[in-house]
Amino acid sequence: MKMGLAYLSPLWFAATRMGLGALCLFALLAMQGRLLWPGRRELGILIAVGVFQIGLPTGLIHTGLLSVEAGRSAILVFTIPLWVAPMAVLVLGERMGATKLVGLVLGLSGIAVLFNPLTFPFGDRGALVGNAFMLGASLSFAVALVIIRRHPWTVPTIRLMPWQMLLGTLILVVAAAAIEGVPRPRWSPALYAIMAYNGPIASAFCFWAFVTVSRSLPAMSTALGSLGVPVVGIVSAAMILGEGFGVAKIVGLVLISLGVVAVSALDLGRARTR
Image 1 (cartoon, helix red, strand yellow):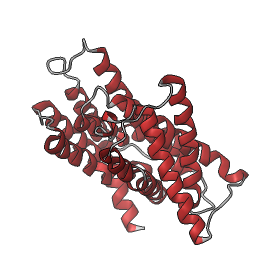
Image 2 (cartoon, rainbow, N blue to C red):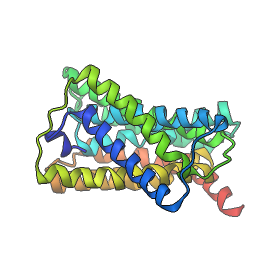
Image 3 (spheres, one colour):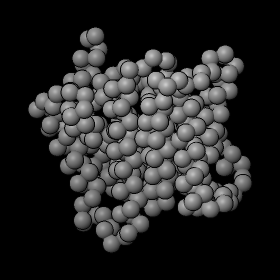
Image 4 (cartoon, rainbow, N blue to C red):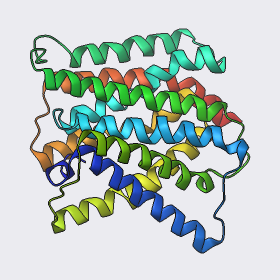
């Protein structure tokens, strides 16, 4: 995503990749004869996922990447379980034990380290807004995850996903047209390669996979496997983009990772015994 912003403005980039993802899923289901026209019962979850899982967070992340490093962005976005924990207690009736409370404190401490006044440029408005966008995207993902867990599913996830991605795409197109105007892409083989990855793989497959997993595990457990994302994000950003590791970034990642493990481990153990 960070590389793609060199060729296309953020909201049009987000809209294009989601549109490609939707087309891939529509084509796949059409070839299998499984394309579904959503009914009234599916309308609520279609809108919820389209807005909170796709449209809103994708727009925030792509825009925030203009001023935030890719590695740092990956850490902030995947603080999802820290926001899910209190939501799951209030909305889903899940229990907040001592271990989860400690995990929540550890995770919030990790975020505090990343925003340490000694290392964070609070005078840089772009950095402040970009980091806020990343945390906002994480909060939006958390809302979607809780809604997904609460919804009584009557159809397979993949049969709704193209419609959800289509709605997210329409939201992003409207936002891009209003904020960024006419798209002005810098066409190049690099952009084609970036879109080939971000459309079918990072959008179509990964969003379907995330929603599928969210249906199967408790809300506070779903994001445990996502711990690999910020790790890969930091390492690949250092190798490909030349971003530094930095003590604050590593300490923040470790604390947030420990927090995520703590708030998720007990529920994951219960899910394995079912």
